[in-house]
Length: 478
Image 1 (tube, helix red, strand yellow):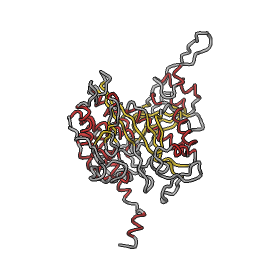
Image 2 (cartoon, rainbow, N blue to C red):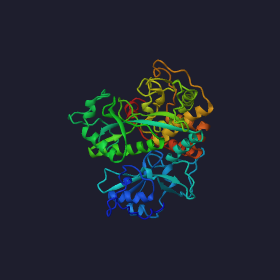
Image 3 (cartoon, helix red, strand yellow):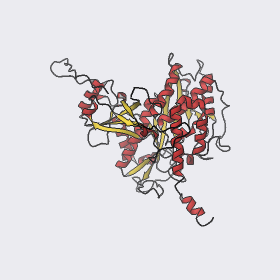
Image 4 (cartoon, helix red, strand yellow):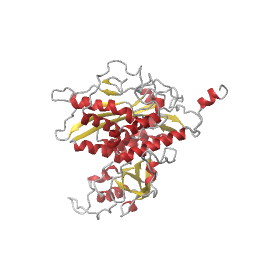
């Protein structure tokens, strides 16, 4: 980390008093270390959170005084942080994964474009998202933000730039300190527990007016842009849509939104959960991803021809999704709970079909003008790491474009009523992932081996738990 240059005092046009640089008022991001110091000083920031997403999308990092952050300080995290299961364990060696014997440090490199305040902290605090490099400066292949950057670099070599827009669903639930008890919907301002079937209900949103106001206020102060917010079908289930943009920037926003929404909910004595299927009998929560690809030279959407019709690249992108997304499912549905959402005849797709404005298909092409033509991947669940979900989705489409994979014809009827085209369990998904050599090579072999090992270890941990279903139906009957 390099120290900032000495502060330059600019005389104002009126003489005497220094003029406040425009960049210090940026809600999100600065260009260099000189601007960092002025930005922090203008806000009276005392502490800095240097954070980065682990394989689960959990914020890991270090907190320090702002003066230490702007000094010539080297920050590091153990490499083991990115090999940890969601329960805090570590996978066994094998299948290409080997735990490093020295557990050496990885250097944190702050991305200054992500610098922002942490609005829920009482003391003036800022946060910055960091990338990871080895001690010799090489990029760390298996960390999530770098995995997405690797896929974007593959697009860049072809003169292409993806544009994405995530939609994130989540549930508000009553506080639940004892995990042995099921989650239940919260009580809204009416004094009653929230019921289901309130899709797009304004009254449903109004039940949580004060909480939603805090989500908006927290988001605005961090420079996070919410496009729309709606009440979904589930009891206490909400959805936030983000504006389209650069994949890294949008993954960063989802990463920060999850923290923001959880903190806003805790302020109101309830939980916000991004579990894929938190409540039995209620719909699951998804993270739909809208995707289009821009030609960097022309600035035009490669999915549309001059006459407005679909291009071969459009169909090849879908063909790649159809062929490789089932193999990448473990990155869209990363936990045992994720597969409870992917059930037949439910609202989530369990196929690899596509269609025009067909919400029963895995890959929906929304109605739009040709310039905005895009493919919506409806498979990912909200528990997915946004960096990895975007990386996997874009990687599958890129393979389709480069290999010219033909898409199947679009589905014009219900696609979710019959066969299931996706893996039905976490272990099956891991096996398919490891078997797709082209996908693993694009994502990075060390990442693929590490991620698969973590998922196998998480499954084994889950198998140690005896469920209520087993006690109810097996205890006295077998």
